[in-house]
Length: 247
Image (cartoon, rainbow, N blue to C red; front, side, top):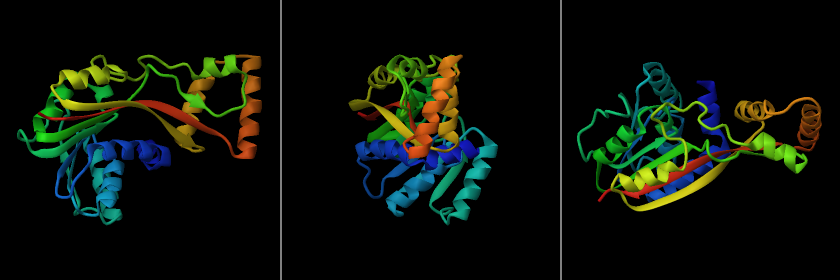
């Protein structure tokens, strides 16, 4: 849970989410559904960003995370602005055409992406927007360390399929899937979200380091020491983003 909160509060992650919200072209009065809200960290950001101009509904299948999401919202004075519901992304507990915007962030990786991408447009109104962000296991990460090129490329190489469900989507097939879902005016782009020193950055750095051995690890440690000393250490995690309009 702490990792979800730390990731969602990271400036680089919020910039990525903001890029999607900007593409959605959210208008006052529109109703928003966040599918797979987790701790609600992005919903709280959205509530502050919209300044009470939009109804926000958040759904998650994990009851524990929902309880924590409600508690965080209460602590930040946002309990009245976000409605939390329990439900599965593959079978959303809402009627057809209930929302102006239906979005999911790093959720399509965790289940049946085809069913999820049928549900998101189903609950969107005609002219409503559907948006998704997924991790990009088909793209390399990036780390700001003074390393020789071959070592850097080796460490940054992606981990194909890591942590992705059998029917999940965590690659550029997101773009094809959005077009196949019958959405119009589909916008598609990759994004490198930057994480400075913190738990999330350390997780990514450790994952990259597992590729190395022997003198490579020594070179890595020296590069880390230099970057930490001069304040230039950060890592980037790749994502795919898509926004489309329901016909």
